[in-house]
View 1: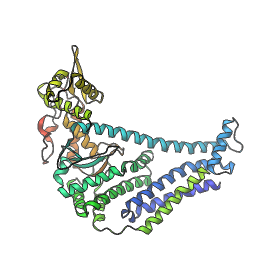
View 2: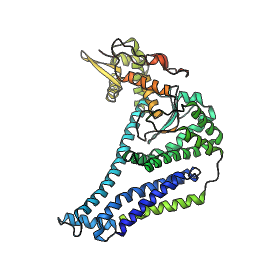
View 3: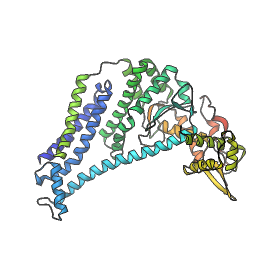
View 4: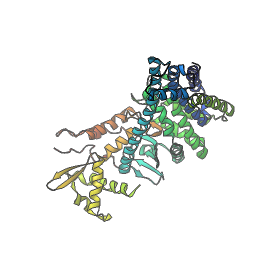
Length: 301
Length: 156
């Protein structure tokens, strides 16, 4: 029972950490640390969600969940009904495994569909995008709307539209390109993937939505930081402002993406930058690492 | 860009740029001739066309013992598709792209969708496609923009 309690507490602690993380503003000054924290919390929550029903079902063994699971599997394979385990308890164990399978397959499915969409996108780019001397290393789409994005992958592509070329001046454009290359280099698509997948399974859960939106914003801020290292704040902030001003205030229905609010946040962050909060960051990392360590140790022992 | 990608692009350019005068599609030989500067073998062009057909970029119709090839959608439609992805208007929830920022007006989104649907479903004979009539309110016109109507009336 104590093991189930551990998992239960982990779930609770994850929920609390998400509440705190989603509200903190120090995360904007060290986006990389904050992203690591979110990943740790996500992993801990997933493992604990699997572990809680399993531990409840395996209470009869009085062993850590990992060992108890092995013992159960051993007995079932010998064809014996495990002693002291009732049918509802077995059901709980199956439920725990089911949660694990769902989480894993959803992530895989997300990855699969993302890769397929990327391949299709890449094929089309090959046919219609052009290279342009003003933006070496990037591809240009001849369209008057403003867009700048990165097609991630082993050979990533940075793409801007003709509308973007008109919208931005040289320095701003260079900052945007560095921003996009940072996405590609640090594989931010893979950082986002599990959160997208989770949101797909649990679209009605608010803290899953929060987590996804926070991480998406942090990833942008991280790329902003990389661009700022090379080009200073002004051009990047200028580019963000121009995008914000050019776009419509009304987001079309059924789309995610960046709201104006996020653009404002990013601009403000660039203009009054404080020092990265090392102490808070370290503390947050310690807490979230402990959160992961707990369910992992229960599964491994 | 890979050599194959470059070839595919060259072949598509021929289909897009030569076709308006030729409503019935091009034979492989005609594509080879149009690419005369590259000195490509007939079989190379055939292979590229087959690959493109496999990807759904090209449609082919049998004529006697030979095939006629035609672009499945206009260049503008493909660009519209890419822009919908880029602006996150495609309705997909995949983390396939990472965007800097998006900037789009409601009208632009409409125009993009119109360009796409006009190309997706073959327009009925006698109802000319309209989307190009109301493209981009005041935006600068792009080089490829006004070349062709968004949908070429395809087969019968």
